[in-house]
Structures are given as structure tokens and as C-alpha cells.
Picture 1 (cartoon, rainbow, N blue to C red):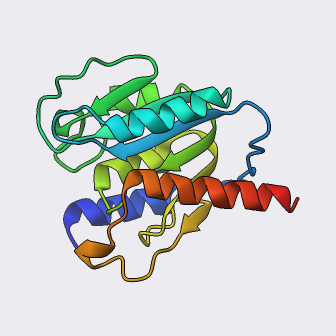
Picture 2 (picture 1 turned 135 degrees about the vertical axis):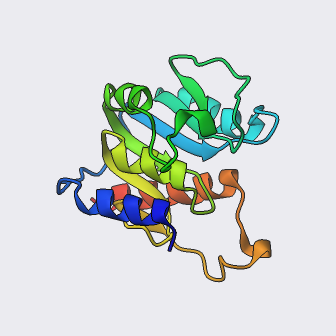
Amino acid sequence: MSLKQRIFNYLQGKQEERNPRFPHLDQPLKILLIYESDYLERNDGIKTIRQDLLLQQMDVTMWGFLEKKEIQTLILPQSRILGLGDYNLLGKPRDYVLSDLQSEHYDLLIDLTTRPLLPLRYIAMYANADFKVGLNLGEGIHDMLISIPDLDTEQAKPEASWLFDQIMRYLTTIKSND
């Protein structure tokens, strides 16, 4: 296990106990989408997901990550892409990133990452969200996990849009049984 991973695990263990509140999708929610950006920073699939949520009267903020030093995309109130320069040498987000992240409260965090990316794991851990959902990558950050058998194989790696559909299906199903 790398030093960066050990530091993350230590900080995760020091997090306060959360009391998650299940979101009710029949009312407007403030949602944070986190995702791994494509190299050209276009993220058409993520933008489509955002549009779908906006049509449902949701307030959506998107935070992406791309493993390159300089990001070309502008930082907007509802969308930003973080790069390697937004993290320190130990892999932890810089203070301005954490300040921006924690200044907002979200009803729901939807993590669309399909592999364990430490920078996005930090974002998921530090986000101020009532309920966090994402793929089961073995880190224990989320309140609800989507599991996929044989995720270790490259062929089994799902697309963000497929993962989003699964998350929404389960959130809707669980809500309907309340």
C-alpha cells in the first residue's frame, strides 16, 4: 500500500460519524456529480446526465478529475475539472479545493467513477452531502454501493452513463418502497 493510500485511510478513519438521509427523488434536490474527465475535457456523457437531472428540476454541480497538470476548462459555479495541480504531493486536495467543496451542502452525491482514483475518493469523502452513492470500490465512503461482479477485468469496466442509470434505478426503487 502506497504512502498516499495510507494517508487517505488514516484521514478517512478520522472522519466524523455520518448520519445519512436518503434522498426523495420526487422533490428538487441539490446534487453533486463526481466523475473522471475524458482527456479532451469535453465529457459529453456527463453533460447529458446533467441535462437529464436538470429536466427533473434538480440543481446539479459537477466536479471532475483528470490526471494532467494543467486543466483548460474554466472553473464555473456549476462545473469544474480538477487536475494534478489541485492536489499536494501526498495526494490530498489543496485548501482552496476543500474550501470550495465544503462551502456547499448537497442532498445527494453521485460518484460516477469506475475505478479507485484517490483524488476523487478525497472529494467523495470531504463532500458535504446527506447521502453518497457510487460503485463499490472497497473504500467505505458511500452510503449506498452498486456492486458489479468481475469488476477487476477491463471488459467489465462500466460506462458512467450505465452506472448513473443503475444508481437512479436503485434510488427510485428504494424510494418507492418507503
